[in-house]
Image (cartoon, rainbow, N blue to C red; front, side):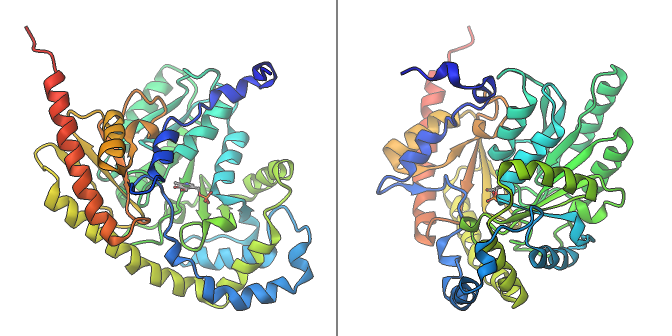
Length: 417
Ligand SMILES: Cc1ncc(COP(=O)(O)O)c(C=O)c1O
């Protein structure tokens, strides 16, 4: 039976991820995977949770419907947690969501009409691109969601400003929002400097747009002096901040939060009622108890050195085995990723060779762009999931794969006569 006539037009706007095959191959035995973005299961606090699970398991409220905005004591705990990062909010500014992925879906649903302009830093999180296309694009080739490049200090805000000036002069529609992951970004590991954070806020004020600040990794910080969230500088209510327990606790719980002005929280809650009524009560109660007992802070202090060791091994191995003549990579100050660029190499072809012949997987750059015909020389490397030994071995394999692919690319280049 052919079902294609039944599917909405919207469905065609999200293309099945072309990295699916790589991720599938990454799971084959013998393949070392730098491809996923998963927290390491060794960090999951299964033992520490036993008493809490038993207690919540006996509480009938955990089995009942709750309010759409979220379990009130958890919203209160989130307010306290946020205040430590310099974000002042009250409980009415908090919406609990089913993962930050849902918050991204709601952001797109709430703000974007078809054809509306929005801007993302590029490369960016695949899960942001999906909903923005789903609700903002008219066709798969639409260009109203635009990318602005980054350098090692994050989004190029001067380039953004030039673009905004052009849009204004031509009287074209201004962006409704700019989406950014300013701290230890997925996919690059880059952190936006404080000056740019403040400039972005100034631009938001001047050109009247919102900022969607997605911050799943900010607490996983290996160095001092990491800039505070953009939201902490936001006096006007321009920033919608997305936080999640996925990387600092466990993604299987699917509990995350939005901090936003009350009008936005109210609209998002209205949408959420149509999506899932509310985020599961049981998980919210477990996490709230975990926070109340001070265990989340303790846990974060434990996972930081665990991941930092992996980052250090990754960087040391890359330093030892990659050719600096044509490869560059980000030295992330936190988070779970680094990003390599290799001049003259098509990372899509490299990914194929790497996984089939060298048994090492990563996600090629084009996956992180709005229109995947760019970003070809970049690749995302995850270091949170593989073991320390796998990181060392995987880097050697990857270096060999790069060498072979580069030679091939060089041989294939036609002479300019
Ligand atoms: C930048 C970014 N935003 C959002 C998410 C989604 O997180 P969650 O598990 O809370 O849905 C991720 C997950 O990897 C992410 O990297």
